[in-house]
Length: 337
Image (cartoon, rainbow, N blue to C red; front, side, top):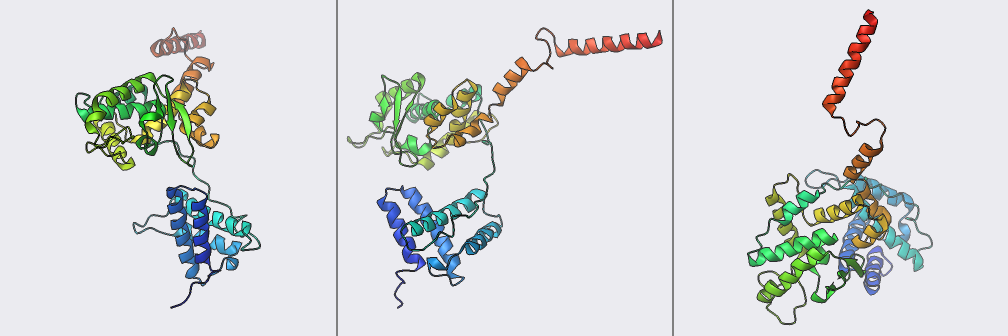
């Protein structure tokens, strides 16, 4: 049996993942980095590249082209985001190798990353549509009241599904109207506002329903299943998706739909982009900037109020066309004269 090369790519990748773990990267990040690096190492092995110093920038560019042309079993190409994530892990790996002096220079330092398309959110709810979804749970039922409280929190705060699933009893500041998100994306804590209506529904759930769901006295998680277990992100997705469909508003979506909606409606109503960025937990304002592009309703209102080529507020479209017909008749009379 051959002994693994301690200076080989696989050994270095294992050391890199251990370094990430020691520096408290999330389990999600570790899995993502691990999968991407295994993909890259397998590609390198097929080309007899076994040590990091054998990888050059042209090699990495070949790998990037290979990712671009790769097809999934369904025949579809990898999405741009997937290609970018694969390459980001490779870049981080070689940056670490250079910093630790395992290689003299970083071949990935000048690698151009694929540009992500600037996509708008698939759907955003209007106020009336959001209220229609919120009205779907039967609050006379045990789980219906719980679900109404869940929907209200999503709508009021725009938090991620994993963040809602992890909420504890003591994360709610009932007097100040604050909500503490612990270990959100990037393992960052943040404190955000939550509306009075959402708090009222959560308070009602905690007082009336949660004691009936509890199976352990030391359970601190707020939202529980009928068996007394914390909710999973997948459970939440299916739950919210069902209520969106039941509302029959002609739009599809789940937990992230309320995140998009909260951000867009706040910006439309005058919230500063920086405050919405803080509430959503975005590390960069560019991530939040996309929600300013979907605020078309506000833009339409401003356009209607300020553009000079607009109808007078006292005139209807029919009156305008009647006036145009009159002008045409006057012009024809002048020509006949």
